[in-house]
Image (cartoon, rainbow, N blue to C red; front, side, top):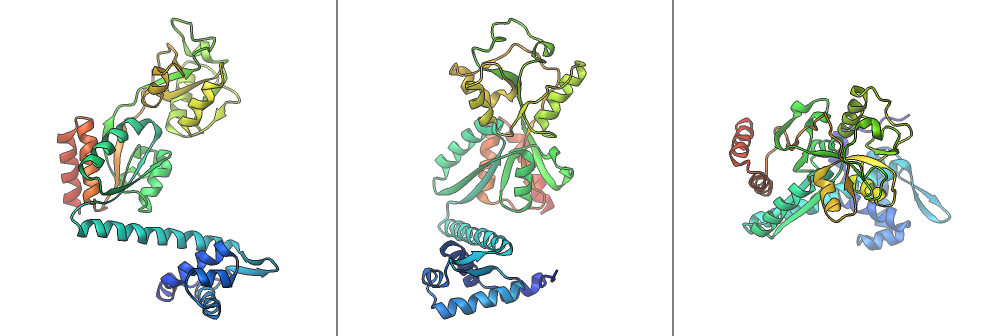
Length: 326
C-alpha cells in the first residue's frame, strides 16, 4: 500500500481552486461540466485534477462509460473539501460581523434534555444581537465533545464526564436533570397510584444505547432492585424518536429527562408514571475546549445561559478562570 505524502507537502501544493474542482467533479460527474461550474477550461480542469491526484498520491476518480466515478479516497477528499469550503464561508461571515462592530457566528451543541435551556438563552441572544448567525447541533454528549475537539462547535450543553479525559474541557454545571418513566396515556399501568420497578420489569422498554449515561443509570436501578434488565428493548439515542414511538405504542415505557418530555405530558400526549427512582442523573454542563479562545458571540451566549439559570456569579468566575489560562 503506497504511503501518503506528508501533510506539509499536501498543504504546500493544494490550492483552494483544487478543492472547488473536487466538489464540482463529484457533483457533475464529467470534467466538462465541472470545468464550467468553476470557470475553467476543460484542459485546465484536466490538468488541475492531475495536480490534485499527484499531490495526494492516490486516484480520486475513475473514468467509466457513464462519466467520472468517485473512488473511496475521492469521497474522503470531497468530504473534507466541503468542510474546508464551509469553514471559509463561516470565517468570512464572522470577520464581516466583527468589522461591522456586531454579529459574528455561534455554533452550539446540545443534548435533547437541554433544549428548554438553550431555547431561552438563544432567544435572548437574538434579541440582543440579531446579526449573529447561529448553528445548533443536537446529538449525544460523546459526539458533541468530539465536535468540540475538532473545532466544529464553540460551546456545548452536555456532560463532559462521558469522555475518558474530561480534563480536556472547561465545564460549569448549570442544571440538575429530573428523570421520569414516561408512557402513552392509555398504558395499562397509567391508572396505578404507585409503581415499583418490579411492576415495570415485564413491560417493553425503549432505552438509550449501551454505555450512554441514561442507559447506565437505568441498568443500575434494575441491578439494585435485583431485577433482570429488560430483554429485547428498542434502542435509540433520540429522545424525539422515543416520544413519537410512545405516542403510537400503548404498552412500552421509557426513562426520559422531564425537561424534554414535559411539553408532551402537558399536552396530554404522554404520561409520567408514579415511579420513584433512587439514582440521580449528572447535571448538564456548559462545556468548552480547554485553551480555546471564546468569541464575543460565545461569551454572550454563555452569559445568557447563566442569566436563565441564575448562575451569574458562577459564570463570571468560570470565564475569569478560562481567561487566566489563555
